[in-house]
Length: 420
Image (cartoon, rainbow, N blue to C red; front, side, top):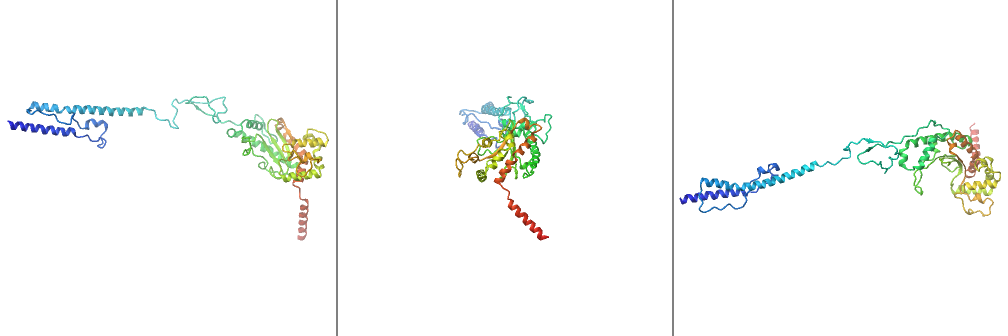
């Protein structure tokens, strides 16, 4: 009987130790075994509530009822494991819930994403400056606005002809003065090109007329006569990039060169004019003119008292040469010397002329004349009046080498005779 009891106790002890080893074995990493969180509860090993097996009494006797009780007692560890598994399951469920909340968040809108409300595009009327940088539409977010590019002006029933300046050209220059910036000009490129073409057409027609008056003026294309609209702002306090006017010059070498020239200036507001002469010449031409005035002043005096110049340039003054010289000096007083020039006395009878550094004459043209049907005739008339003045300046500054021309002709005659 005692032997049977010891055998039964030994079997019970080994069974408890085996159960202890199975319960105390740590769970493997579910990730390493490719186990998903949803299957953790089914694959995770069971753990006991304590590390030691329950102690049995020395009077313990094994029976079928006790075996059933032992199975029930050994099953208590699974209840704790199920609690742990339920906690793990709840943690896994919380992670899934967190992921689902992230998925519910709206995705970031891309550049080309459509608006949520699919708001229709709107066209704002009465706001013609939306193309400017920084101008706000006054609408809230979610609105699409289409900005119409400014269209070119219509001709207003007035045809573009080469004999006069079109009214649209004057209107364009007026708007350019008010909006003198690159953004505006780019938006109104159609008006600019139309106006520029109108002016070039007028210059081309005027070139033929001027060449008939002064045979030293060649018939050059407009690109060699017309000044560019862009300003040089490098050394200017005025930052505006464009000139608010159109202009062109005719000389023996076009708009550039050392010769005296004829000049037209088209600008709205009564600032259009026709001029001629030398504007800001270099020191050498000025020295030549002063020497000629000092030695033979009657030449320039006779030109300034010409009836045509007195009538159209000096406002209809009389024959008095003093008034004519005074009017001429008044037009060129901008950069004249305050004192006598070097090498001349202060009591020189021509001291007013010797102080000058510009030698120009000009007459204004009203806007109605510029746009009128007789604008070309008026400009040609003024050029005819200025022709003697331009010829005088060129004869002093850039005289023709008549002796050289005669010698060349004689040499040619000798060559022709020798060939015969």
